[in-house]
Image 1 (cartoon, helix red, strand yellow):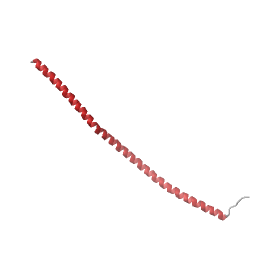
Image 2 (image 1 turned 90 degrees about the vertical axis):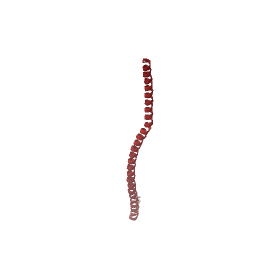
Image 3 (image 1 turned 135 degrees about the vertical axis):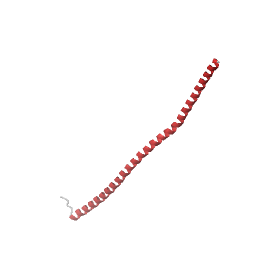
Image 4 (image 1 turned 30 degrees about the horizontal axis):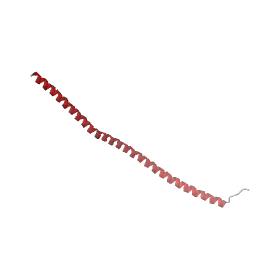
Length: 102
């Protein structure tokens, strides 16, 4: 024997389903809004990361240049010392030759 639903029961169940669907639709709409906001935040964060990476590269370049200055100075100092040494030896040799020629 089939169980039939009265019209009042049907309307009550229909009303309950409509309320649930309305609540679910409202939650879906809220989630869409939140998802859109999260998307915007993600895009802004990606842009910030790109700017940060560029700034970091620039700072690394500047730091490398600053670190190279003492090395360059030391290299110039070594060259100056070697030049003075070679000049001194050459001067000594020339003066020895001139002294020997007299």
